[in-house]
Image (cartoon, rainbow, N blue to C red; front, side, top):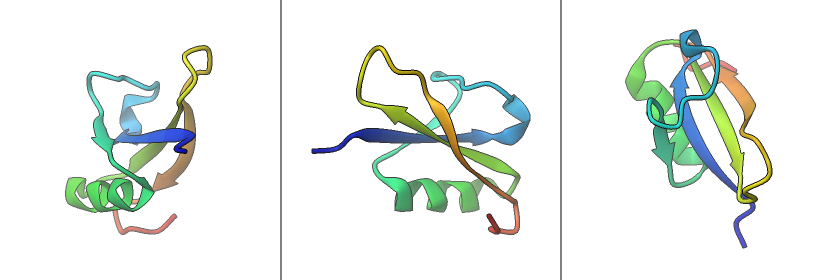
Length: 66
């Protein structure tokens, strides 16, 4: 059972924007999306619970470092 979904967006966005992010099918996909963007990115974890709020999972620098 999946407990989270993941989304990525530029770190410069600040807060989570469900309409301005790229949704990932898993965490590996999220890291690949970050590499495609080529800028500082934030990976967001979105709990599969409607009462829970998305939270920053990790920031990924444009060079791919965490």
